[in-house]
Image (tube, rainbow, N blue to C red; front, side):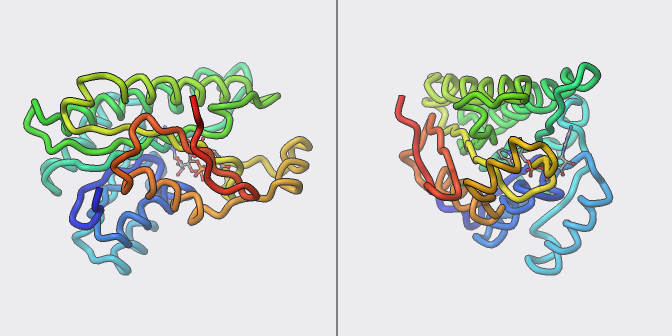
Amino acid sequence: MKVSGKIALVTGAAQGLGKAFAAALLENGAKVLICDVNSETGEATLKTFQEKYGENNVMFVRADVTSQAQMEAVFHQVRERFGGLDIMSNNAGIVGEASDVWEKTVDVNLKGVIRGTNLALDLMRQDKGGRGGVIINTASIAGVMPVRGFEVYTATKHGIVGFTRSWAENPLCLDNGVRMNALCPSMADTTLVPRDAADFVKYYENHGLMSPEYVAEGFMDLIQDDSKNGAVLKMMQKVGKVYMEY
Ligand SMILES: NC(=O)c1ccc[n+]([C@@H]2O[C@H](COP(=O)([O-])OP(=O)(O)OC[C@H]3O[C@@H](n4cnc5c(N)ncnc54)[C@H](O)[C@@H]3O)[C@@H](O)[C@H]2O)c1
């Protein structure tokens, strides 16, 4: 897909990988709605983007991906203000394994991606008046391998990979011009990465931390390469980009 002139929506885009994805899309001439639950950081990112890419090419909407009503309002805004949707990035995610937070991890990471995908499909489907499009779901390397100590996180990310690959084979997508891919980065330099857990410190000392901008290159490949549907792209600092073979 040629990104210039397209309309995109990125969740969890106030900071980290989502912010880098939004910047890459804006850099390539898309209009972008950035959505995040954190309004303070979201507004600050909006201001930076507006100064660099033009006031009318980006907007911020505060919303929680766990809320159906709030997400419906986000999709309403992208349709009303930008005129449709071509690129969806279901990216918001958290880490939380403890007994009082694990369900929230499932709600944000897995149910949030399912919700965003359903709403995006509704807008993109050609049989419902859409233009087709591409949906990129941010999974993780934890979507394709076990990660000790992060069992719930790993379960959500495996779920995203299976969900994305299954939709990609569904005629409802294939016949309506919608592609769907999963992005599986290893550790990237964002606040999500625990800086204190011994296993993690050892891992990134050995394997390195990717910059969000580098991860955004893989994200853009999955959008721009029309041959990629149901693709699962692993990204690792020392190995680079590797498409999973199933
Ligand atoms: N950083 C890594 O090493 C890494 C590796 C693989 C996958 N990922 C995945 O990348 C995605 C982005 O993570 P990141 O590293 O940029 O983390 P981050 O914490 O820097 O950014 C995540 C963003 O999501 C937002 N968010 C959290 N819960 C939300 C909700 N309920 N609704 C809307 N927005 C919400 C946060 O406010 C934040 O702005 C996540 O899905 C994460 O699992 C990250």
